[in-house]
Amino acid sequence: MKKKQPVRDVFVHKARKRKKRKQRWSVVKISIGTVIAAFFAILFLMPIILTITNSFMSAAEISANYGSVFASSQTGGKVFVSEKVNLKFIPDMVSFSQYITVLFKSPEYLFKFWNSVILVGPILVFQLVVACLASYGFTRYRGRIREIIFFSYIILMLMPYQVTLVPNYLVSDWLDILNTRWAIWLPGIFSPFAVFLLTKYMRRIPTAVMEAAQIDGAGEIQIFTKICVPLCKGAICSAAILVFIDYWNMVEQPLILLSDTEMHPLSVFLSKINEGEIGLAFAVATIYMVPSLLVFLYGEEYLVDGITYQGGIKG
Amino acid sequence: MKKKNRRALKTRISSGLFLTPSFLGVLVFFVIPFIVVIYYSMVDNPISANFVFLDNFKRVIRNLSFRTAVKNTALFSATAVPLAVILSLLLAILLESRIPFKSQFRTFFLSPLMVPVASIVLIWRVMFDYNGAVNDIIGVFGAGKIDWLKSQYAQVVIIILFLWKNLGYNMILFMAALSSIPKDILEVARLESATPLQTFFYIKIRYLSSTILFVTIMSLISSFKVFREIYLLTGNYPYDTIYMLQHMMNNAFASLDYQKLSAAAILMSLAMIVIIGLLFIIENHFGKDVEG
Image 1 (cartoon, chains in turn red, blue):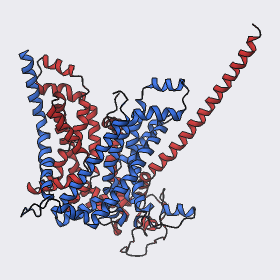
Image 2: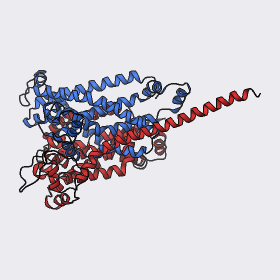
Image 3: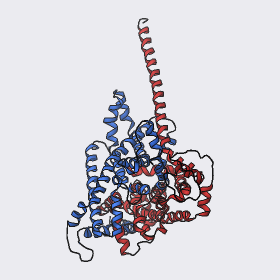
Image 4: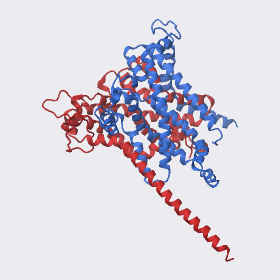
């Protein structure tokens, strides 16, 4: 008996050492991982932070640093323009002059901002309404024809703008709504994207629930409003966020369907910033970011949920 | 029995009614005009309506701007999409391993998705300018300055912009997929002393295959939308290598050449259907033995 013990002790001792080595190694792995992740995170955030901090620079500082990029030729008086472009993180002198100019002196940017809101708002609201109705139609009964229609919705959703813009343009021409906001609203409202997301989600509701309601005497509309929609609130929020991102950024449609640049949203207009207005550019960009950031901060969970439901990940 | 069938029929009809707004809208705004587009693409002139079948297609294919645009778009997608998929998978693996601050990191990586492109292009233009920050950095490594947006490296700028914007989205998808791999199989693999590499390639990838397909498709679609970024950076007529299909179509809209537009749109949709079909077949082949 005494002979066996030393052998066992050695084993235990070695096992403990191995465990410690493993623990130390996994700590090292975790810290390396964190550092790498942090590095990339900073890289990712940099452009955003830069835009925001640069919006607090005065016009003189902007042209001093970025003048050679935007070849300013019309600023009266002497302006120091450096040859090199300095990417500054922290302004030499924090100034709100950009914001003051945007808000009070050149309100055309606010006007375009409002254009964006007007274009995106109705699309957001009505696409979701139409999509809720449609996904109820797709969940409640799953015949062959309906499945084929749903499949064609998916195909349509996958088609890029190059394909869908030509039909949209044609229809807008026939309906004589070209160059009006309806040309943007209507195709947006009937886009199959939200239908797809909501249907996937709604189909997870056990049919037993809906059938029980039906047996209890509920009509279809009641099943829809009292059961399906409340259960899908999460998906509706997620879909709303995703739709918002897509349309807040929209560029292709206004370019083609709205020839009157007065109605262009800020997403398009911002690119037309030219020399004289460089002083405002960053502030405008930051203001334009604000709704997106607010939606993001408030709804990140919904956004993540929405993305994973798109992927059809179970569980 | 009869009551049940009547009830079923009633459900069928009324749920069909729920479908009508969306269905009519899709029909009017997408399906019907698309059929008309097919018609236009095979017709000589919207007014005289002589069938010329494939002539329009031949004309479009021979058009130099179309070929440049297609080449650029294809090159871009072929480079950007695999990068987007692989890098985001790596990022997801990184984040899913037990590092702290996971949800904060997730927020950071997701933020480029929410920030409107229009706001960011300024910084991008500044960074990649001839006298800009990136040239400074590569100057440190001894390489010469490059006029990024006006040289053959223009695609690099766009690829970086594309990756920056889309990695977060793909990463979320992969993170969700990674966390839904059944733990018991991984446990078994560990007990059978499989190396992490083996575990990854034989087990995880099988479970990830449908997500990889989905991410690839979504990235592919986003890669066609990259026009937005290019337009905001460079305007209507960018440098050669980043002149994309959408540019050609935009400029063709100006001349209202319906035939050219329709033919190009049809070609593109055919290409999309082929690509998506291929991807589905590949996924079926690889992911077949995974349950569910």
